[in-house]
Every structure is written in C-alpha cells, then in structure tokens.
Amino acid sequence: MDSAPDSLSAQLLAWYDRNARVMPWRVSPQDRASGIRPDPYRVWLSEVMLQQTTVAAVRDYFHRFTARWPRVADLAAAQDADVMGEWAGLGYYARARNLLKCARVIVADHGGRFPATREGLLALPGIGPYTASAIAAIAHDEPATVVDGNVERVISRLHLVETPLPAAKSELTRLASRLTPRARPGDYAQAIMDLGATICTPRSPACGICPWSHACRARAEGVQADLPRKVPKPDKPTRRGTLWLGHRDGAILLERRPDAGLLGGMLGIPGDGWDGQGGGAPAEARWQEIGEVRHTFTHFHLILTVHTGHLDGPPSRGDLVPRHSFRPADLPTVMRKAWDLARHGLEQPSLPRGLGTA
Image (cartoon, rainbow, N blue to C red):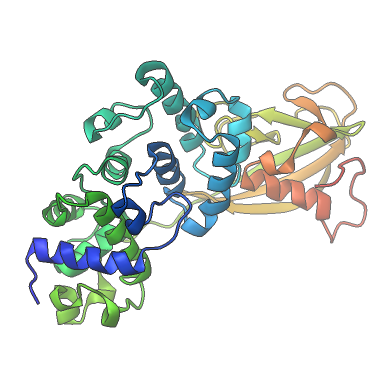
C-alpha cells in the first residue's frame, strides 16, 4: 500500500469515517459532510477541559457547562464563583479562570465570535498553540497541525523517532505537519487523535487493525510498544500541611483562595504549611485532629492533617458560610476529601456535630 503522506491521510480519514468516536462536543464525519459545522464554543470548551484529563472524566462536566452556559456570551456573563464551583474536581484550576477571561474578551472585542484563524485564536487569553490549532482545524477547517500526546505517540511510532520526549516535540510536530491534509483537516485532526486513543495506545497497541500498520516503521522493527521514549521523571516530593474545618451554629468556615497559585480562585478550607498561604489556625476553637487526607498534584504528593472544631470566637480569616448555601461539590478534590473525612470518618466515633449532609 502507498505510504505517501496524501495516501496515509486518505487512509486514516476512511478509517475515521467508519470508526469515529461519538462525543457530545463532536460533529460526526457524516454530519460534517452534509454541511453541519462544529460550534467553535463547544470545540474550545471541550479542548480546554480535556487538557490533562480523560474523555470519561470530562463528559459530565461538559454537559453541565453547556446546559448552564450554552453560548460563549452566557459564560462571559457568569459569576466567577459559579464557574469555579462547576469546575471543581477537574483540576488545573487556572484553566477555569482562563475560560472566563477568554470568554469575556471574545464578547467584548470580537462580538461574541471566535476568531477563524489559528493566529487570531493565539491572541486570546489562555489559548496556546495546541488549543489554537485544534479550534482552527476542527471548527474552521484550517489545515493546522494538531499535536497532543496521542498524536506524538502515533507519529513517533510511524516514523520510528527514537529521540525521547520532550526533546522530540519539534521533530514530531514537523513530521505530523507533513501528513495534515488541506481537505478535511478538521476530521483528520480528530481522526489521528482517535487513532492514538483507541488503536495506537500506550500499551499493547492494536496493530492488527491499524490503518497505518503497513507504513509503521516501529512495528516493522518490533519496538512499537517502546515508543515514544521519555526522559524519566524525577520522584515527586511530599509536602505536609494542616486543614482546619471549623463550624458554628450550622455554618462552615471556608475561604476563597487567591486567584494566583494552587487551587486559585477556588472555595477552600483554611489551611497552612503546604502552599505558602495561611498562617496558623484561623480561629480559637476546640480543635480535634480526625485524620489525614492524601492527594497528588502534578509536581508533588500532599498529606494534610485535618482538624475539626466548634469555633469559640470570630475567625481571623475566611467566612462562616451557612450550610444550606454551600455545596461540597464546589470544593476542589483535595478539600472534598477533607470534607468527606469529617463527614464520614468511620474510625472516628465522636465527630463534631453540625456538619450537615453532603
């Protein structure tokens, strides 16, 4: 079979026409062929959500976001706290803050319409080279080269690129660009990402049903499962800290974290000793240590000792939030773990009262 770039692209598109994954933000190849165009807002939102996250984890968030804010203008008009609350649990919270910044710039400076070119998209806050290429290709059929982790894996195997990541990124992007067709570039971008996600997987790639198996140099050498090579990551350090979950008269002591830094802009439980914020217990209380929660961020592991207590006086930071106006789901994952420990600490026979139901 022909392994010229145009032929490979055509083979992959034919495979995609038969095997495209069904996703709530995607227009199928059949619908695109009939003239239905993807909504740039939905493409943008899905691409931002999918960064560092799986499709399975994103689906429910995407449905909730688009039900609550169906257009970019709706998101631009949203309250910051509402958006951060809906984002809670997805992680990498700077993405949510950048969503709001970008939506507001699109409404204020572009009449509520996304720029139709990669260069125009790159000028928007929070949109980097990958996201700009993805929106330009998928929503506007610009022949922009989209390179995510799936594409890096496919291209490194197809061309037998032995250089380890991240040093190989520029070479992989150059090789990927040679395959990007001028016809149907949006479908092609999604096709090669689907190929990496479903066939050319990190472990045990399904080479027997791959449309590019005949041209794959790594398969010919029997090293496809070893690529792409990566520089070993250093061991993550472990940080420790404290959280104080205070309560009084049915209200919970919470604080809005600063916009900059970890968990920026999120609702949180006052803490100290792990992130440069805080500064000791937030109020006089009969604090009781109830256990530890553990969480892993990109660059470190975290162990937090959790204390609960009935507040004896006014807090030095944070606000007492009535239980009925607070959703535990608005907390980032590590804080929700502490809440769940306080609520459901099965090994703690006498947890403080007044924490309400989740």
